[in-house]
Length: 248
Image (cartoon, rainbow, N blue to C red):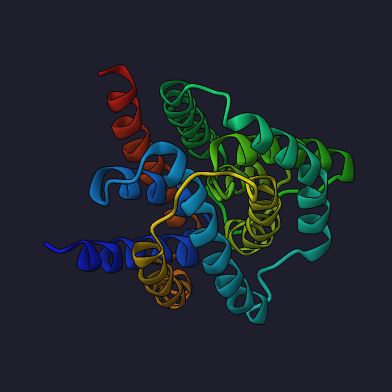
């Protein structure tokens, strides 16, 4: 199978995940870029930020029209994470690749477990508290910058289990957080000398954007609790792949 076809297929799957689950784009994009398309871990994390920023912004507009975005909560969550994302992005170049891979896997497992423990409900449990939103957002921003991920795979569990949003609102709101955090992390990496293969990144991104529209339509037909369980399963699968690579 050609590199172009692989990029299109992987992009479509990742866009579908972002549109339907409000996250999982980077946790899937990084392994796809490394194992399917031959990117180095450093190039894959930077490329994933480019792909996820464009795709999440597209999916955000669709979810906003459906009323699934909590703008105030999402803006505070993202604003608190901007500076940590920039600082951690600057440090990322000095961390060994095996450490980044292992950390990526470990955090994905923790996020999946948090989702499985959270009540599976379509109802919002409690009004989000500003202090909780800011604290969770700062931690998420640091992870986004360090690991080169959009943060949705952690934002959704935090919005559900820490801030009490229903799953559909968490999906839409996480896309706002992802877009802002990914842009901040990209700014930190702007001066990086890591070479990027735009002949792969461009079609990958285009397919992901188209997939995000289909993901949004799929999410509207699936219950919040089901989305929550699917999200956790995706995280555990991706974490297993990354952890195996880090240990071998």
